[in-house]
Length: 338
Image 1 (cartoon, one colour):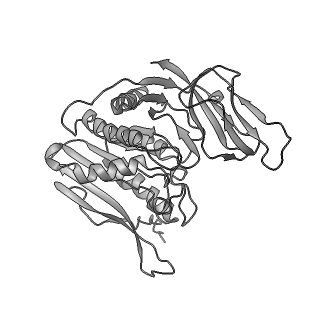
Image 2 (cartoon, one colour; image 1 turned 45 degrees about the horizontal axis):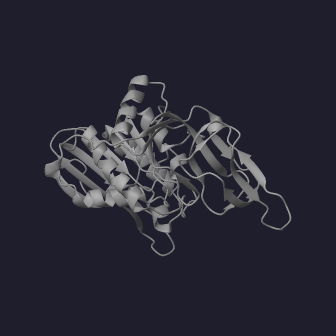
Image 3 (cartoon, one colour; image 1 turned 90 degrees about the horizontal axis):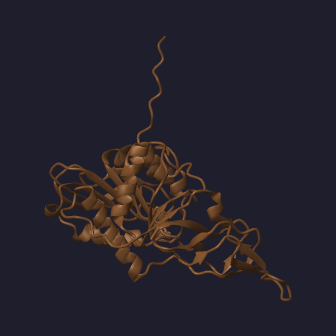
């Protein structure tokens, strides 16, 4: 007897608006979620789709981590202000990608404790976060020609404001990504080395051959007028670069940075009171003290000094006043051109 091959489960997320109809449509990605206070409830992820005829598609996302705010601010603003008559093609805007984490102001989802940016490609029959990842990986990303995913340091890190691309095996794709990152035109432009790219949205998008732009625009679990302005300008610049929005990108000066190896990272091997010795954007030399950690449980004990493993610029630092063993303490990048 022939046995029927098992069918793959379908993702339960459904958009409440059309994704392929001209005009401007505000709605939700509705994810059924049965919980104690709502037996037939749903998680409603805000989405805007703006389309005008034929042309490229851009997918713009924020709050991949829920405590990062420049992206959501810029994208709620763009969804409100951008009109179909201004574009050729389609713009899909999801200001709060990881909506449960965004509402809770946490890095990971409070529902399943999963990190959306470490769980791709996701599962259609998995947890809430896995379902969100699967829907983007299988439905929205395949529609896109270019993807912009906003990040900042959240509550635990602070960064100089940069847009970044990754080193890819496909050098033609890498060149397209770098061109889009340069068009974003943050004050700093970085070739980013990830600590661990397994399960990242970035990797999933790049594996589909798409042009991908990401950012780190600040941190500390908040936003500033400066970093929000960078995000707003950058989003429109990427749309102009893609040929979706009329006009040329607004280009100002940027400092080119590179992270060539693991020596860029400094991790804490102690816990205690964090004392920064170098400010973001400052130059450092290999061996310089960049921070020290004081024992926080008693007086009369010496601090532990932490040193730069390479020369360059301090582009990231631990943010809260207390630090734990294993936390990223600082990142030093090489200055390629100013």
